[in-house]
Length: 113
Image: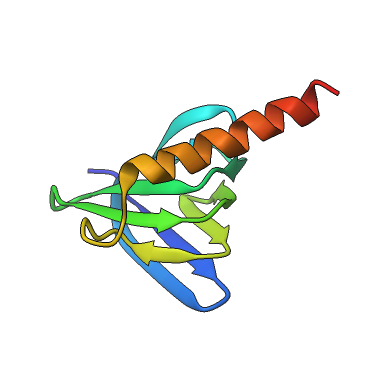
């Protein structure tokens, strides 16, 4: 099974996963799934939950603020202001979705000017 490495960076935290099969993210262009050996890519990420499907069939979820994702050389780096491992007790998926939609709508307003 082909895997790749994912690293999350923020000013006060770093999270790394070594054997990721797929990574699901939300960017300005919509939802995106990154697989091993993805072509080089750079995208602006919206706040929300990033899901990493691991080679051992588990899923790891990380909550981010908006940020930048870069894919190069079978590695994925995500730079953001804030990262936290997802916890159902402290994170509300619906409020994260609302925040993401608000930022996207603001982006569309600016783009249409």
